[in-house]
Length: 271
Image (cartoon, rainbow, N blue to C red):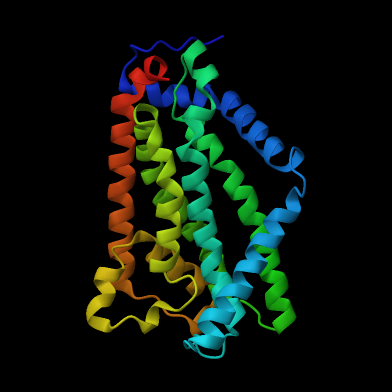
């Protein structure tokens, strides 16, 4: 069996992530089993949550505030198309951010690449995403609305969403090991992000002179990309904003990974 030492080089660290792929699979499967087997409503929660959110946002933004949709897109579909990447982003951030604390016993007993823990925790979010995506296509069929050929680019924006969420998640989970009260701020950050991101409305309503700066929120580029993929010509991408979102997401991924690796050796002592 391959043995990983804490003193190995950076090059060997990344190769050892592959060598410990079975551990990654075990942790991911365990988290999925806990999520869906040891709950009262199980998979039903992954169905109820998005549908309830769509109803609330449609009533508030579509009926009361009367914000415009994209062309002829039914407002529930517009909301759901924005909610898909948001739930993926927020779920990866939430699951990964507390993963090291939740696996304190494992981390204190044996050395392995700690990056495996938050990465495997994010797999649960991908399972939820697949369920939500199936519901979305069912909703599109209900309204008689079909996606365009742009849908072939959806995997690219799924990867974009994972990168945009995993970067800050790595930073927060490493920070959470040292400062345990950080976890109390995560729900507030997620709730705040929901309302400043274009989940319940189209980013087209943002004034043109502010849209680039608004897109410095990386979730904006992710949501716009999802809507472009799923709604076709009814939703257009704003290229400067997309590149801004990609740049910020890339920087956050680099910064989060750098901070995680720099503090990783002290995790066992701090936990």
